[in-house]
Image 1: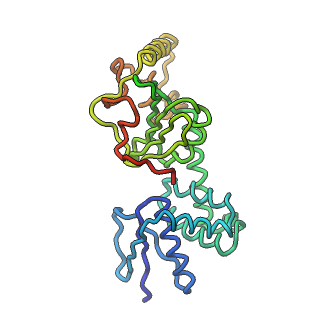
Image 2 (image 1 turned 30 degrees about the horizontal axis):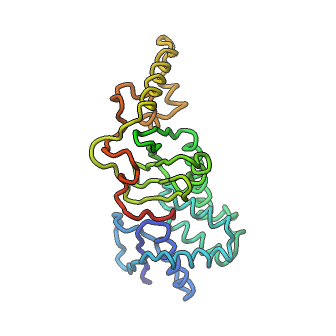
Image 3 (image 1 turned 60 degrees about the horizontal axis):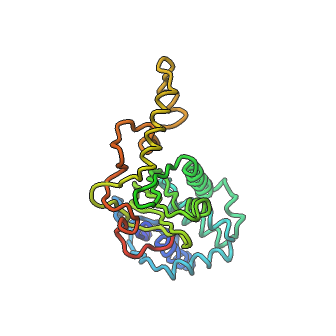
Length: 284
């Protein structure tokens, strides 16, 4: 029985591209496509599997991207990137197969939805983009005491790379943070500078203090929301159908018990003091 090669990467898109580069080299020797596996995940090793670690190398990831892009085109590559950011369980293997085909056959391969891998990539890409589109409408920014605007976010797909350009062009003169609380990373934007994604982002100490203006607006909005509500016609099920409950925790009108002046735990309202990493990296 022929052994199976498993390429283990760090879970990032640059790491996946490095693993894909190894996979293309393996395919060039007429071996089957390796299996892709994220490090740290509980995956049962096969009896005859050979596990190889794909080391993340930013420069190499760029070279692999350009190598495939020269055959597939930018549009197809962006679609694969967005599919990678989804939460589809089998996306890594499907992307490995899809991007290998794109390298061999060009962009037309992505339209072959009869291929289950191509169909999965298209569906995963659509899911990520749909969630990013929803986030542009549901995201709530709060003005902190230091003048920074802070917006927490919790989505099934990793949508931060798709939000940076939208919000930086919409609020070019505002310092803001979009915090993905599930993945522990955040978009950081300062006026006049390009936005970046900071990994390992966490809130320190005990409170994020709202500005006095923000606190007053929140209080007025909650009172308005309560005043226009007709108790006899309340329908929580219908409300949840229009606005799923998973989005409620970051909506001021749904958090009547929130303490005045405090948003979430943190002492210093400046985003520069909130980033655990001293050198935020550009978006993957």
